[in-house]
Length: 240
Image (cartoon, helix red, strand yellow):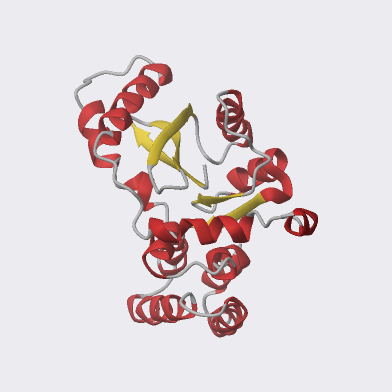
């Protein structure tokens, strides 16, 4: 798996975390589920551990696209170490910042964030730090939200990902898009006995949604992303 998306869904008050992987051809696969909130480190570690047990090498460099949860980030750090390239979902971040602002200021901040995320990482980070300083006087909560995990909004920029592929790798939409199918399938149940029952129905929904999965847009550029994330050691280049 070149990239793995991790995000949560709530079904009948039960939290379920889902993981979807993307292979070098751009094909998408449902990888696993765990019952519990993404704010719980143990639950996230259980999910990642189950992926490892079923053949996903957590020590291989890949991109992890997450919603920005601290617990999720901590679990990836603990189980994947320095090989993990983590991209925070930009849609989640923009929403988390702008929902703390009045309408006019929210519109301005959204525009600033979208523009800053388009170009060079260092330039974009400086622009967002400057905007956070502007917000801090009257909206310190929004400023703090903007600065939290700021570097990881620009992971794909630093990896040189652009165009359609960048748009797909910048958010957790890959998981959120099948949620309508998951809710339709799980909605057939009128009463859930427990979390495990909810987990089984969410799994059934994702497997149904998986039938309609298409290749990631911009997948023809994935090879270049792999080369950046997993460079060939100098001694092997010389041997070749």
